[in-house]
Amino acid sequence: MTGMEIWDLYDERGQKTGETWERSRAREIPEGRYHIVCDILIRHQDGEFLLTLRDPEKDVYPGCLEASAGGSALSGETPEEAARREMQEETGLTAGRLELIGTTRKPQSRSVIYAYLAVVNCEKDSVRL
Image (cartoon, rainbow, N blue to C red; front, top):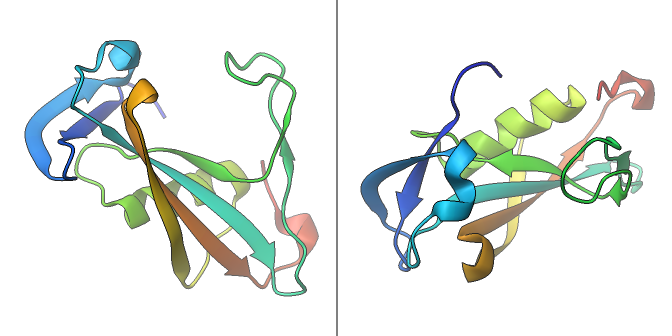
């Protein structure tokens, strides 16, 4: 993605506030405001889950195994739209249906995490990280 990443902000009830925020200032989101983050667990129809290895240059958990694709919702995206975009960007995979398996509000990171399960039917060597 090129350019500045802009997020919508939400209140504690999950309602859009009408405010937007630049990703570069994520650590400055005011208390009581949240941005949306999506995590997608990807399971092949045979029951195996996709695990990925984080880049060693990442600022958070460098070089660690990760069981999900995901990232922040861009301004104007719903959580599911963001999950689909992030899954495609990070793995090259798409899913017909995403199942919302939970939401978690994390005040310390000013985020609401939407966790999805995606079941895919594809050749395993079609993953493009």
